[in-house]
Image (cartoon, rainbow, N blue to C red):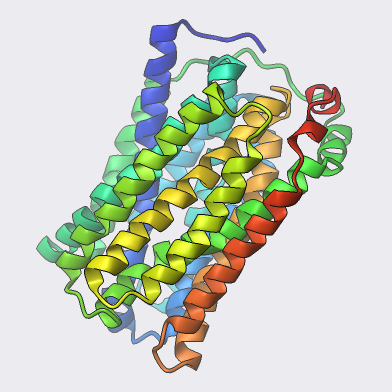
Length: 402
């Protein structure tokens, strides 16, 4: 597909997408802090809290298969606008949930609504950026995750302190509606190519060594990511005895480290790492495991936060590389579908990790040590799988043809 826009319009589109990503992550992470007062109000057990944190990912993972295909077939604009509108509605409905069941269902629907956004945004990058600039463009979008972490933990904690957890979700829903209107007005309409022989195309993708190995890498490192994202607020307040506002403030430090790592990794991938992307996967996974161990065995809160920040920096290199590989080596006609398939692994991890940690904390009578060891094992899975990936095998004609 030809590149749609000039440089100025291209980066305007990227800015709008970045804002949408930021709001989406902000909405998604709110539940990680809100679960603290929600658990008290609904008298939830740790495993029930884990299920609520996991419910989003059940719906989100289902849509990975369909969202990428929709974006490949119909273009990114329609899919992106629909996603932001849907997740904004269910963010608002989170604030009126009255029980464990209703909250579980609303968060599940929230996941369905947002599930197509990530693969559709990759299609938008491919529609508007040349191949050699796509890793940097995608890294800018992905950095919104960490930027939301910088502002989000403290901002959400502040909103919940000033108002309450229900009003916080209503405020976030209103922000999402505004972003939906902005996307409607500003996103360009791509020239659609349709998808001929889509069944054969998907079958061909599923035969690629790249897809399965990167999926496993993303699954393992996402166990770490979502385990930390969903349970670190509870860990810091319960095991490290921090106050809610203090926890929200210090949580911005690891997010800032991740933000720097993601932007730096995107630049390195485009400029220096063509054909050698696996190095970032391998070393990123290795240091994620190492710093995770050092974090939970640290004797002071300051050292724990330092190693958490280094862990997030290491994670960022894997994060960008996973999503840059389809953009760099797949045909424009298959980028959305390939991204959705790979991201499915990460969302399965999102289902497993929160519930796994909740169960392990309950089994070990409030101790988080066993839970952190399970996260280290997941990072090692990514490390070993990354070592087996040979980028040269995906440089042949097949990825460009499918």
